[in-house]
Amino acid sequence: MAILVIAEHDNKQLKTGTTNTIAAATKLGADVSVLVAGHECADAAAAATKVPGVTKVLVADAAQYAVPLAENMAALVVSIAGQFTHVLAPATGFGKNFMPRVAALLDVAQISDISGIESADTFVRPIYAGNVLATVQSKDKIKVITVRITAFDPAAGEGSAATENVAAVADSGLTQFKGQEVTKSARPELTAARVIVSGGRGMGNGENFKILEALADKLGAAVGASRAAVDSGFVTNDYQVGQTGKIVAPELYIAVGISGAIQHLAGMKDSKVIVAINKDAEAPIFSVANYWLVEDLFKAVPEMTAAL
Image 1 (cartoon, rainbow, N blue to C red):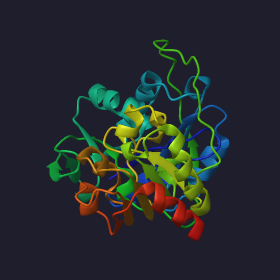
Image 2: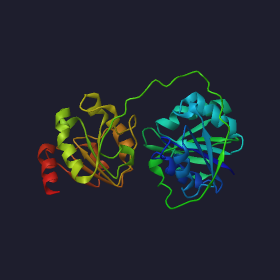
Image 3: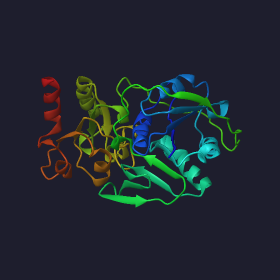
Image 4: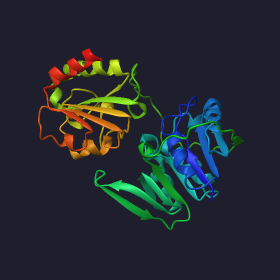
C-alpha cells in the first residue's frame, strides 16, 4: 500500500496536525509520502523530510499554491492520487476545504474525521457529537480520509526522507485569494496548546475573561470558550471549542463557568485531565471532569491564580 498525506503548512513550517496525520498514516503501512504544495515552500518541505515514518516528500512549488485554494489543491491531489491507495489530510479547516472535492472528483466516498484505524479498509469515526463511535469499511480503490488530529499522538523522532518535485497543475482561475485577518496572540494556538483555560456563559461578559487570561498567563495556557460565550459576544469565534468550533485534547483542560452542553463536550472530552469550576452542582460538565469544584468562579479563579 502507498499512502499520501497532504501537509498543512505556511510555506515555512508544518502546521499542527500534519505530524498527527502522518502518525495515523504509518498505522496503515510503511510507504508514506507527504505532499507539500506551496510557493517558496522549501523550508516546509525540509521539515517534512525530518518527520519519522515519511519515506518521500513530494514538492509542488508554484504561485497558485501560495494559499491552499480548494480548486487548485484538489486538482493537484487528483493528478497524483492514482499512485496511492490512501489519501489523508488533517480534519482541520485546511483538510475540510478541499478533501471533499478530491473525493468527488475521484468518485469515491470520503471517510471523515477518523479517530481510529482497524485495518487498511476499516476505520473508526465519531458521530452524534462524539456519543457514538461508528466503525466503517470502504471498498473504494482509493480511500480519501480526514484525520481527527487529537486522536493520534504526533509522530516523534527524526526522519530522513528523500524529496521529489511533482508537476504543478495549471491555476483553475475559479477563485482568487483576497486576504485574511489573522488573530495575533502571545499565547499558544488552541489546537496546539498543552493547557487550555476555557470560559462559558457563566463568565457574564467579555470583560470578565480577563480573570481567565490571568490564570492562563500563569499556566502558559491558551484561552478558549464555549459556543454560548461566543454567541453572547464575550469573545470572537476563534476561541470556540466544541463540535462547531475547534476539537482539542490538551494535557490539562480547565472549564470555568461552562455547563457542559453536548456540543462542547464533543470538542474537549478527550483532554487528558479535565478540571471544572461551576457553582451548579448538577452541571453536566462534572460528568466528564477528573476534578471539579462547586464554587463561584469569581471567587475560585482569582484564588487559584494567586496560589499559582
